[in-house]
Amino acid sequence: MTIEKILDGTRLTVAIAGRLDTTTAPQLEAELKQSYDGTEKLVLDFAALEYLSSAGLRVLLAAQKVMNKQGEMVIRNVNETINEIFEVTGFVDILTIE
Amino acid sequence: MIKISHLKKEYPSATPLRDVNVEIHKGDVISIIGPSGTGKSTLIRCINMLETPTAGEIWVDGECITDKKCNINKIRQKMGMVFQSFNLFNHMNVIENIMAAPVDLLGKSKQEAYDKGIELLRTVGLADKAFNYPDVLSGGQKQRVAIARTLAMEPEIILLDEPTSALDPTMVGEVQAVIKDLAKKGLTLMIVTHEMRFAREIANRVFYMDDGGVYEDGTPEQIFDNPQRERTIRFIKHLKVFEKLITSKDFDFIGFNTELEEFGRRNQVPQKTIYRGGSVFEELVMQCLLPNLEKEFHLNIAFEYAQGTETLSMSLKYDGAHFDVRNTPNIVSLAIAENASESIEYTEMDADGFTNLVSVKIK
Image (cartoon, rainbow over all chains, first blue to last red):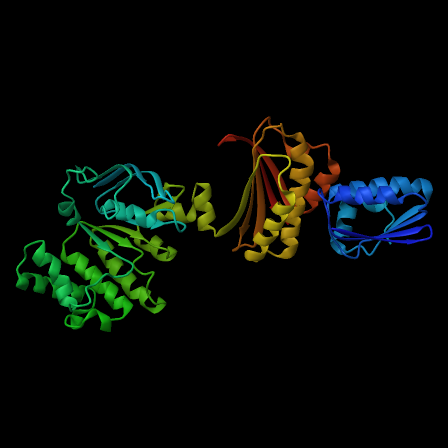
C-alpha cells in the first residue's frame, strides 16, 4: 500500500493505492492520526485501491468519527469491488461515498 | 501370489516407500497410478529386486525374496519386466533378442526358442520384422518386441514400468492393445501408467500411490468414480491445491497472499475468484479465527481449485476447543466473507489432531 497526501488549506486529500488489509491498515491509521489537526475536509481517494478488508473498514470508521466532530469526510473514486464491500457491511450508510 | 509387508525403500534424498502392505492375487491386473515421485516404479522394481528394499518383506509364491538366502534368479524367471525404454539388444535382430534368454536361462533348444519366438511375434503383430534390427523399428514396434521377449520366458507375473510413456502418441494405442491381450490371457500384471483411461479399462484393481505407500486400493470404479480418501480425490478430480500449516499468530500474511496470487496465476484461476478467496481468508482466519485460538495452535488451510468445474474452495482445519467460526461476534468480517462465498459450513471433526473443520465454497 502507498499513501499520498495533498494538503490544500484545511482540505486534506489522501490517495491510497494497493491493499488496505490486516497488515497495512495500521499504517493508514497512523498517517491519518498525524493529519487530523486543522483538517476540516478529509477526502479519501480510492482510485488506485485494489483491495479492502474489514481491518481497513475499521480505520475508515474511526476516521469518520473524528471528522464528524471537526468537519466532513468523503470517499471518492470507489471501484465496483470495493463498493460491494461497503454495501454488504452496511458501511454505505455510515460513510459519504461520492 | 505376492505378499508385501512393511516394505520401505529409502534413498539418501527421498523415501518414496515408507510402509507398503499389500497382497496381489493370481490373475490380478493392477494399474498403479499416482503423482510423480510417489514410488510407483520403485514398488515394481522392488518386487523383482532390481531395487533392494531398505526394510520389509516381499513374498512370491510362499518364498521370501527379500531373504538373502533366496535364489532371486529363479524367482525372476517367474517375473517379466517391461521397461519404459524397451532395453532391447541393438546388436541382435528381433528374433535373436527374443531367443536369447529362453536358450541361455531356460535351456531351450534354438529351434524350440525360434518357433516360440515367431509365434509370440505373431501375437504382437510383428512376425514380418523377425530379422530386422531394433534400430529400424518404431518406438511402438520396439516396445511390442520387448513384450514378446518378456513372454518368451513364460512368466507368471509381468511388471510393466510406464510401457507407453516414451512413445510417440500415435504408437501408444498399438502397445496398449497388446497389453490388453495379455490381461485377457489370465497373466498377473502390474502396470505403472499415467494414462488414466487405459489404467481404468485394463485393470481389475487400481493402486493409487501417495504418501509413502498404496494410499487407496480398489476396483477401477471405486478409485475413478468414487474415491474415498482426500489425496485420491484431489488426484482424480485434477484438483490444484495450495496448502499451508499456520502455527503462529505472527505468520507471514503478506507472503501468504503473494503465494495465493501466484497459485491463482499458475492455475488460471480467474482473478476475481482468487481475490474473493483472499478476502474470505483474511476475514475468517485473520479477523475471526486467530484472535480466538489458543496460544499454541495448528491451523491447516487448503485452497483447492477444480479446473474441470472452475470452482475454488477453501478448507480450514484447526485444533483446540470446538468453535464454529460463523458464531463470531465480528459481524462485519462475517458479512464480507459470506458475500464472497456460496456457502460456509462448519463441522466438528476428530482426525489428525484437528477438531474443527470449516468448508467454504468461494463464489
